[in-house]
Length: 171
Image (spheres, helix red, strand yellow):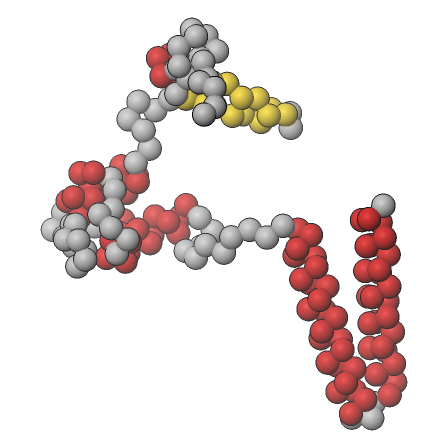
């Protein structure tokens, strides 16, 4: 198991780990709970989705709007009290409450994940190449030879560029 991190100021066990980026450099500070509160970097009540929702009366709706999860029986009051969902189905049951908040927090409601730029470039290259080759076949079948020659040249330039890039990457 890893080493126990100690507070930078008092040598107690660190439970708060602060990471800051200052002038494009990462600075990490490990603090115990007491020192973190003294420095103002710890929220003594912690982050709670329920608290955030309660702050938005429009999102929570009126107190008489009682939603309940059909799978576990968890209801709006339980959610407000605990700040947690009862089960995975709660996310569907509480969707009317969660959706407006999540939409404000994120750039959409569906998680699409991240793709490394080199993978995205490779995918873009293969998609472009596929479309050009399909257009070339259609142009030849339609006897549009000048257009086909244009597609052939684009394919050749694209493949040559990829070949050069691979040589650079291997070097």
